[in-house]
Figure (cartoon, rainbow, N blue to C red):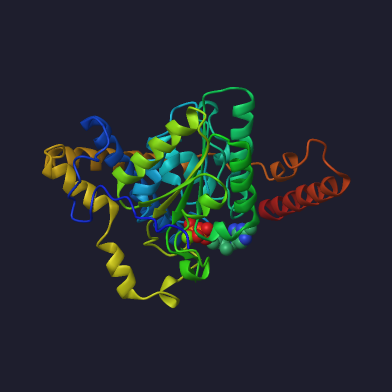
Length: 358
Ligand SMILES: Cc1ncc(C[n+]2csc(CCOP(=O)(O)OP(=O)(O)O)c2C)c(N)n1
Ligand SMILES: [Mg+2]
C-alpha cells in the first residue's frame, strides 16, 4: 500500500492558525487575498442571478472554492502561465483579468475570451482535462528555452479519470517540466462522487507513480493552498520538476446553472461543508489579528460591489458580435463547406431584417 498522506492545514475552520506555518505575507497581501475571495464570490453570485434573468448562458460557479482558486493564483509570478479549467474566475481576476471580459465570455460572446497580452492566462477550457497537456507542453517549451517561468494548471477530481491527466502527468515526470498541477477536488464531478472517480485513497498520491511529489492540502484554507503552491512553484522554477497539489475542497453551488445538485447529494452534506467556508474562516483570522476591522471590511465590500456592478454594465453595453466571426476564426483558410454555411447564415439574417423592416 502507498504511504498515507496527511493533509496540510494551517488555518482551521474556526479561523485559528498554526502560527509557525503561516506563510510570510504582508498585511496588505492578506487583505488583497481576502478582497479577491470576496470578489470571486460576488462575481459568481451575480452571474447566477444574471443567468436566471436570461442575461447569461450556462454558468459554473466556484462558490466554496475561493481559497483554492485565489491562494494558488496568488503564488504565481507575472511571467508564469496559468491554464484554467472552467471554474477559476477568481484565479483569472487575481492575474488581472477584467471581470467584464469574463462576463462577456460566459454570456456567449467569444470576444471575452481574448485575454489581454501580458496576463499570461490561457482561455477557459470546457472540454474536461484538455488543458492539462497544453500546460505540460508549454512548461516543456519553457524548459527548452531555459526560461525561469512555470505553468500552473487547474482541473477537477473528475478530470483525473481522463487520459489527458495520465498523458500530462507522465510526460511531466519523464521530462521533468516546470509545471504545477492543481487538482480542485471538490468531491463531485457533476453527479459522480469522488469515491466513484478513483479507488486511490487520495488524488495527490497518484503523483508518486509518475515519479514526482504529490501534496494534499485543505483546499478551504488559503494559507495551506498558498504555501503549497509557492513551494511547488519555487521548486519548479529552480529546475526540480513538477508537483501535483490536491486541494481538498467542496463545490457549494450546483455543478452549473443547468444542474440541480439536490437530486444526488444530501442537504446534511452541504450544511457540513458550509461550516468550512474558506472566506468565513479567513475573515475570522484577519479580525482576530487586527488586520481587518469593520470599517475596512465595509470599504472592501463596497469596492468589490462597485467593480462587479461596473463589469456587468460594461459587458452588457458592448455591441453584438459579428455572427460571421464563428466562421472567420476556425481555420486560417476557410474550407468550402464553411463558406457555404456562412453565406446561408448571412442570407438568413438579411431576410430576417427585411421582414423586420416591413
Ligand atoms: C471531454 C468532456 N467530457 C464531458 C464533459 C461534460 N462535463 C462538464 S464538467 C464535467 C465534470 C467535471 O468534473 P470535475 O473534473 O470534478 O470538475 P468540476 O466540475 O467538479 O469543477 C463533465 C463530465 C466535458 N465538458 N468535456
Ligand atoms: Mg469536481
